[in-house]
Image 1 (cartoon, helix red, strand yellow):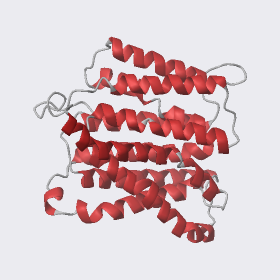
Image 2 (image 1 turned 135 degrees about the vertical axis):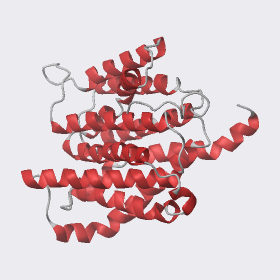
Image 3 (image 1 turned 90 degrees about the vertical axis):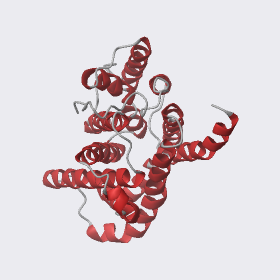
Length: 310
């Protein structure tokens, strides 16, 4: 990268770093709002609504509408499902566990790439896989030392990371699309999945139905949705078109750093040596995994004559 390239990439890179840091703090207002009688499902639903409405004027432009496709909806469904499940996991299990289980993406990305896109198990991928699984083992240890999820929130966090990995891989291996249409598809997918989750939780009696509390907290939730969700999302997707994927992936790991530190300080949840080592291994796995994507997808990864399997 030349000095001019470095200068042009500074602002997008700074934006991605800030966005990752903000997302790592997302758990705090989520839990504070839940203490006021509004469950994380309602917060997630409003966040996706804000995101969709904010981007709608740009997504409805004729040149953007001309790029719409079924692929967009499927990818948006997967990414939206990932964030909806991640939001749910933040209130169903320990914050640190939810964040780290979500960031098991290097493991899922490696396995999905090999299974669905014909990737090979290179030394780099094997290292990322080993680091990720070792980190998972440390994070999931309980009193008996068995590395298995201890509650439904752990399982939801793992599922969120899996959906995110498959969604980002679909995006990575397909033709680039306008940022506005990508954000809109993401918002629609997440809104629909959140509604489905709310329906299931309502049937089981696990969903707060205090509509008065929901209405009272709506101004705060909508403001947070704009500042902590919609704007950072747009900025990251905009930056992804201007900065190589390697740098984007590493900068977004700031979420793990701010999330684990803030949770250890303010959530009053256990955070010992095994969790710290597990976090370090998972971050290392993420670094190894994203640095393997240094070649632009337009040149190598996207082939319009070959339809990927998923």
